[in-house]
Image (tube, rainbow, N blue to C red):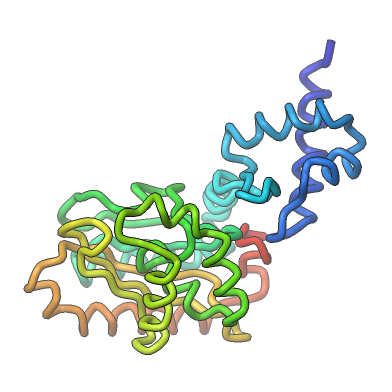
Amino acid sequence: MTSGTQLIDRAVAVMDVVAASGASGAQLKDIALESGLNTATCHRVLTSLVSHGLLSRDAARRYVLGNKLMVLGARASNGPGLRGLCAPTLDRLRQHSGETAVLMLRNAGMSVCVDRREGDIAFRTLTGSIGGAVPLGVGPGSLAMLAFLPAEEVATLIQANAARYAEFERLSPAKVLNLVNETQRQGFALDMGELIDGVGGMAIPVRSPAGSPVASLGLTFLATPANAARLPSFEALLRAEASSIEAQLSPFDLPSDNGLPR
């Protein structure tokens, strides 16, 4: 009979192999080989880790680190790290706008809400709460990151997420590509109630010193004519805060290649 310690050791070994594979992920046979487990045991461990959100499996049956790890890592970094750095930023965005302020990070082909401040009015959002995730390209927070990645990577991610886009009534790969182009032209991502009736959002990328998007700052609000008139002020707030964060970033604050906090 396998002891609890052995089970934990096996799970950690599997996660180490998956983590080393980066954003491209790893297949069952490779994970079994690298971890030293037989295929059946490895599959059971993988299935359990996926069920707990610690790993994720894509359409090509490749395993990557899961969204739950991203949230746990973010919660562990209340001091150093991007989440800690952005905490005062979210407070200010909430205070000056009265709207819900959101910090998103990338995890492979997904975008995860790692922190937020609730606005004056509560309503349904795409991610729901801290830890909620959507495919890159769904909603302003993820679009703000996707749109400013290299063109080849954008195309690869849109293709990889095609099946996930089908879960959203008003999205398709072609529509996401159009939104990417629009976001690039504007310099920010905007949705005025297209994905969720009555709910709008705006987001700005937070870039590394090399210019790569590592996160996004966003505001979520009711999609009303009154708030449409406030869009210039929302943009100014987000740009000022994103610039402030970018000026403070150090290599230790930046997410790793798969989007998980270091």
